[in-house]
Image (tube, rainbow over all chains, first blue to last red; front, side):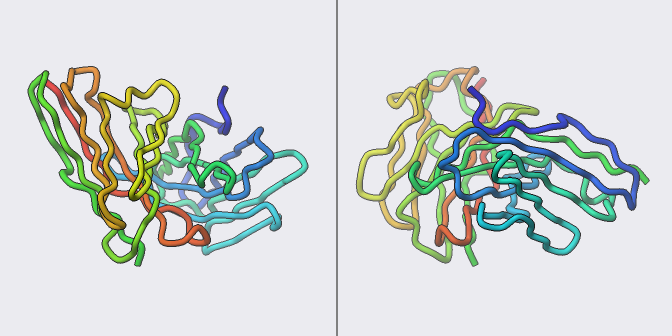
Amino acid sequence: QQQVKQSPQSLIVQKGGISIINCAYENTAFDYFPWYQQFPGKGPALLIAIRPDVSEKKEGRFTISFNKSAKQFSLHIMDSQPGDSATYFCAASSKTSYDKVIFGPGTSLSVIP
Amino acid sequence: GAVVSQHPSRVICKSGTSVKIECRSLDFQATTMFWYRQFPKQSLMLMATSNEGSKATYEQGVEKDKFLINHASLTLSTLTVTSAHPEDSSFYICSASMDRAYGYTFGSGTRLTVV
């Protein structure tokens, strides 16, 4: 059973556009929701994270929107750039599960000029 | 801060041999580290939780006798793939956290190829 669902599987966005990736979870014990960016052959790098007591968090061009009642959260990348082309993973963890980070299946983002 | 170093970055070994991968937290102490496995174009799958001074906790379906984990100190965890076979070829990644409030930092990964 997939604990964290993610869509779309792949996404193509024009330079300057908005990239939107959506995630959903089932375990209500999750209390930390990070997003990771991964380039080929590299480990994932933390982009931005949110906790369920906040509905939105913005850092630069990256914004997380969080809907606790729907158990959904999303990543918005504003003014997308070719350098943003990477695989993005949403994830979740809970203190009650020793902070194990559970990853979504990933979204491959391509930003075209 | 919160740098996690993983070594080696790439390793090729013969079938039947063992390979050790190191994960170090360079500027902080980590009582808990995690080991993940990633196949091409797939997500990261949690293999085990490494606890300093105690036995690792393995996820369901992960062979603990094949993937030996040792958390010898607050800054070092090792993953040993024993009697490696071609199907063990994968990208192995560790992670650690300085503080839960700051989230988890991932190492750069180790590409293991078993021939």
